Structures are given as C-alpha cells and as structure tokens.
Image (cartoon, rainbow, N blue to C red; front, side):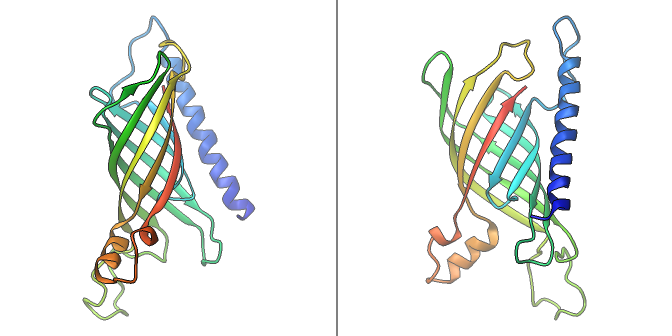
Length: 204
C-alpha cells in the first residue's frame, strides 16, 4: 500500500471518530436527544466486495432487526493501475436473536445486500463510444453485493456512555456479476464466487 493511500485511510478514520465524539458530547445526560438523522452505530469491516478496509456510520432501526450503513471502502492498487475507492449503502436484516447471558447476544442469521458505487476513471456507468453499442450491457460503477452471516454482541457500557455495545460479525457474500457468471458457466463453483467479510459494529 502506498504511503499516500495509507495516509488517506487514516485521515478518514480520524475525521469520522472526531465527528462521532462530537455527537456523543451532544447526547450527554440532561440534554435533548439526538436528531433522527444522527448515526447510532460505527462500522469497521474488511472484505466482502466493498473494499479491503471499510468504515462508516450506521443506523439500527425499529426493534433492532434492521440496520442501514453508509460505508466508505478502500483497496490498495496491488497489481492494478490505481487504488479503488467505493461508497456502499448496506442493508442488513436480523430476524431473531438469542440471549446467551446478561452480557452476550447472538444473531445466528443475518441477511442483506449492499449497493456499491466505484469511483475512478476505470469504471463506467455509461460505456464510452469506443466500445460497440450494446456489447457491454452492465455498468462497472455499480455492484449489488448480497450476503448472509451471523454475529455476537456484548454490552460494554451503560446508556450514558459513548460506546454502549460491540458486535463482531462475519459474512459470506458475492456480487451480481459473479452470480451471473456462475449461472452460465458450469466450471465455476459457488465457492469460486464467494467472498468472506469480518467486521465490528460499535453501538453509540
């Protein structure tokens, strides 16, 4: 990873944590509750077709079964011409949870999908004129990334603390073009199109 790319990544993390800390100070006991649009989660993830390293705010809605995250992802260039930068809207649904103890909660099944947008000159929403019209019917900027996974959570702070609980999760996922390739090519197995993601979710 180039130093510039690494520096950019740490700058994003620092700015996000600084902003989150500011929100935490607003929501101290005796003050008015935060507005609905303030995030109540922070997500850190690696893998899953949305960047080698990913960070962003999230929202746990309703009774906690539904989560929506807005994530920035970064992958270093490795052997490609440039590093990859992505913005992903991620939807997760957890139909049930199992209370393991006073502190621990398990979510055996989580399903969802993400919609990612890739930034950069190498990606196209509309293909340039130099390509035959209709030859490529897909876009390279947008990817749909369905997944299935599970999680375990533990409470690490009281309601008046900045970080109230932490969730560790794992996911098996893929993306739309990989599914289409698997469907038409019998030499491709499900394992070939499967990616692994692990992450941590901090509830604020």
